[in-house]
Length: 321
Image (cartoon, rainbow, N blue to C red; front, side):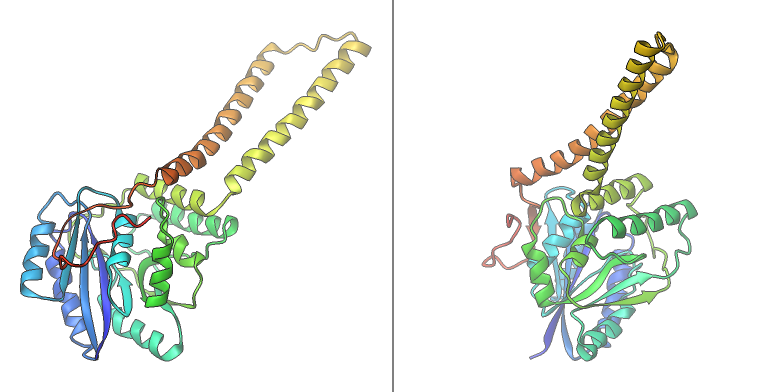
């Protein structure tokens, strides 16, 4: 019996590129006759014809399965849903925009089979076509998070990777609500081979990741996998407590021994405003961690499936938490 490979493809408003993706991935999988394939598309609450196209594909190809969310839960939820629902002996996650080249799949499978790795992950060695300022901030993020957290995240890492079943099961067990998959992949360990490739631009459509969304996603990663911001807030508090004590001593000595009232109203006001800003900043850091904790303890489902072509007798995992 052939081993099964599940391809998880999160989709959000991808009507332009889906036919191109399906054509390319069908071409590549035809070159791997020793394996069976399951194409698991996760429609993340798309507002265009994405779901309609997926239904058409599933009618013409029994390998195509789809999950359609009740609303947009985000790419992280879509990937997690795919991991929960995947039935393959090996599982790959990839974007529908063809920036994750399906042509790499045979090489990735060969590395896992012949070199003893648990997963093969991809990383971009160039950022051609990407705005320079976005590339600069991306590199800064990778350097920062590797210094302040236990997660091993390689610069240029993509979500595109092929994994053995054991690794996928470990990811499913990490059922946290606030998810940052790049950090999860690194945190759980397993032996990973990093496959470099040249950056590929979208085949069609527009990116759904604005600079602001990427910035918020990076904060999600830092908060999820590092306590350093909390430590920084604590050290700032200690520093200004010491400085305040020194200031009180200076004022006391000058007034007692030199009869100097220590004038400087303007500088005092500026210093108070500065300290107030630092306090609010540190409170904001703690608020971010508290908000994440609040969402975790509410124990809401990570995703909700509205429609699927999955067999009725099989129970979905959308409430696994």
